[in-house]
Image (cartoon, rainbow, N blue to C red; front, side):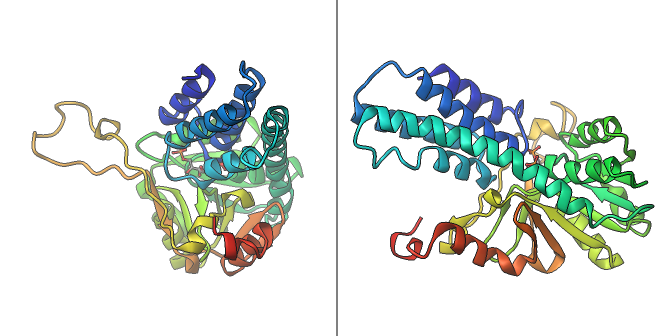
Length: 310
Ligand code: RUB
């Protein structure tokens, strides 16, 4: 087994690399390195090896479609290649192109999303999303005076990363525990969160607790914005696939011996927010409603997807 691939898969599984955008870029970059350092020259063996490496990467975390889309984009020309050099070159070119366009997408989302924010507003974010943070940081860069509430996001406490990121960007940020969301929501003007996956019906799959934040925002009449690159749209959901919600080890929630033996712990990592709770999806292509997601997927995939499937 290849070292770069196994190390990347284990970094993603153990959450040393985390967040939907970062894991997608890490997966694509690992395949680029694999192709660059590939020692053989047989086309059929290369095709089989690349597909195996893709499977190893995909098995690392199940929920974020960004990883699947990034890998699929990187290896899209391998199976049809007629020469080894073409196949290898395509992995390097497509993988690098994916990484570059995904970084550019975050910058575009930052510019578009920051326009939604007015001077003096109070905002909220959940977990640690590079896309959502880029919007908040850009608003401050433009000279807007904002305050942000960031949730702790138990059990991994990604909120600690968020408050560090936002503080570094010059944002006036306050950390709150997850159960304070509804109580604080009455002070908030808008919520910005990221996305792991967006389904063809416009539902959002993101960090556990996102749906509670959305319900609290809905109840308080607060705008709920999802910051999502379009490669987080899941074409597989068009054809009936459901999104697997990752469950992680219980020792992320309780220490050994802390609760009586026989008591169960359930530790789902993501949840689903129905489209009806989402006001805007802020993408690199512009702001859209959840109802527009299906059309964008069809446009990006081309009509032939209905004959070929995914
Ligand atoms: C991270 C999370 C983030 C999205 C989007 O969960 O839910 O909101 O992945 O992140 P985890 P980004 O910490 O379990 O990976 O905008 O950076 O792609």
